[in-house]
Length: 258
Image (cartoon, rainbow, N blue to C red; front, side, top):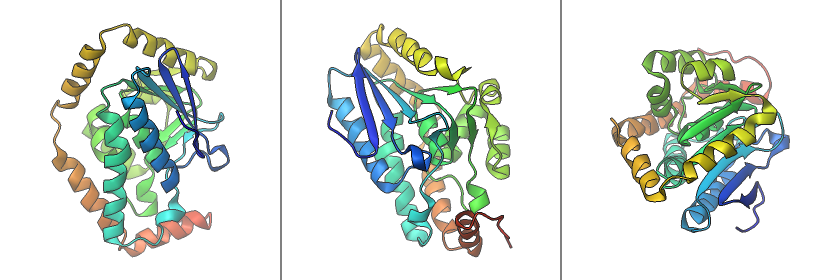
């Protein structure tokens, strides 16, 4: 496994520990980090010595606190669509369709693209200090990396509507209650729990695991919903409220939507 600028990688007992290493930015997903995640996951899928992947964030504050908003603050509709499409295909869908099991160990804030990254993983474990949410509508946007689809699949329409439309965060404990995470654990137990669960999975037939992942992903799953999200995400970029939402975020004030 090669060295990355924004990622730390460690392979132990056939498990790749992939740590997003932008602690000073709360591990936000910028373009370079997404490109590195794509490269790292792809390499892991082709490495026969790696049987499973655990994704976490550096530090104690954040798993991933969202996308790097500055990078797309001036995008038009077409650029917005391309941002969502490329991210979904190269990172989020790549993880979701991985024939090797992927567990998200959520060590803090998992917001926006960070929660979408966790939802693309097959299993989620959160530390009890974690806060989860999709705050995009507070920026005049919607989730663009599969969030509208995967959150609905995990928690149902009612809770998905509430979380996305209010932009509110929920606790790890509440996330466990609604099925958004499999377990909420003490922070010191996070990686041990993820490791123990992965080791149990890896004790099973790898061909059967790959087949099961493929079959589960096929459950009531169509690409039309993801395409609708990409289109709707792109149209947000031409609204004045998106410009106001981003400006308010960067200026650390409340937005004045019209």
